[in-house]
Length: 452
Ligand SMILES: NC(=O)c1ccc[n+]([C@@H]2O[C@H](COP(=O)([O-])OP(=O)(O)OC[C@H]3O[C@@H](n4cnc5c(N)ncnc54)[C@H](O)[C@@H]3O)[C@@H](O)[C@H]2O)c1
Image 1 (cartoon, rainbow, N blue to C red):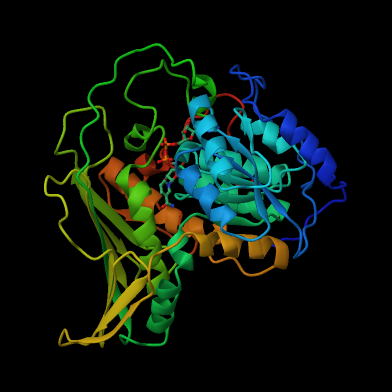
Image 2: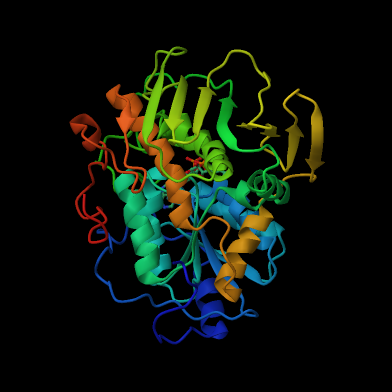
């Protein structure tokens, strides 16, 4: 899947047309949500993206402009890539995104946009680069594929298992290059470490443990408030059931509410569990548990601030230990450890690894210098223009994301999940089945890709 081949003959817009449109649109689009309904399903014809060759310039639209600032830097670290558009429902962030592009001395200004659906209609856009909150990832990515765009999408790949499956099916159906933003898949020393695991550096790899620690504060109790003039609250909520605005959700704190995010599991767990799954060489587990709780603050957060998830893959196993509101700053653990019958291998989370023998003696250490996101963006561009293999195609990204979804479902139902290791689907569990997907605002549910 994820072949870069475009699938129809719509003529590419000329550079002149593009420049004309872009300069006209430099100002941020009007605050109102102009397009009232989603554009899902209205144009289900095969994608209309242009065919790109090795020397073609890629025009990227970055959507969601906090993490999106790193996307701007990442894409611009690749030769012959241009940030044509920056998009956010918060016009302050659009302006900041435009300014950031300006400082990078790109030949021309990036145009500002508030409604991402305009980018989908715009034939000049080759790539949408999604750095919005999690509940948007699959929705925007699927709409992007339908519109013929290639997609770089942040981790976690989806908000729930139904969306994970739908997105993989959409990328395949529309033949788009879709890469997930788990950038460690492109760190040279992590790639080398995983290769060494495969070559038997620590013997048979039997178990992996990974950790996350942070000293986050509470978010208090949200109070009803006027929607800030710079925010399109309706389009921020998008596919979620419409709720009154409160003052402690936007930005970032959506992570800790099930409607919008998946807690620390889907925030930082995905990074480390992805490496765990890769190093163990496994796909889906047979059993999953996740126990923990909210111990630190009495506030609006719903997701656990402390917890341990355990994954049984049959012939190997893994755990993820999380402490998000730890009062002790700077407490050190590795990011990921692998244990084999002939030694262990440690990843710090950066661009390095260390190997120990069974006696605990260090036998190899590789430090590759500062970790950079650019190789992941480079790999994405190479896949589009040169047909190179993606380091994190969405089909693989979603398998790792599924570990997070399954663990969160185990936590929310208080059950140990039994899972079909071939499909990732949960066996015999009525409570868990209810969390396979979520409630959508009318018109936003992705339809027609998978059943369930
Ligand atoms: N790969 C990494 O290392 C990494 C690092 C940080 C964040 N992330 C991921 O990036 C995503 C964003 O995280 P963040 O910390 O920037 O969150 P954030 O809440 O600070 O920013 C999200 C932005 O998206 C915007 N947005 C919401 N709906 C939108 C819409 N319909 N159209 C356009 N913009 C919209 C918001 O207004 C906001 O500016 C998350 O999914 C997170 O997991 C990844």
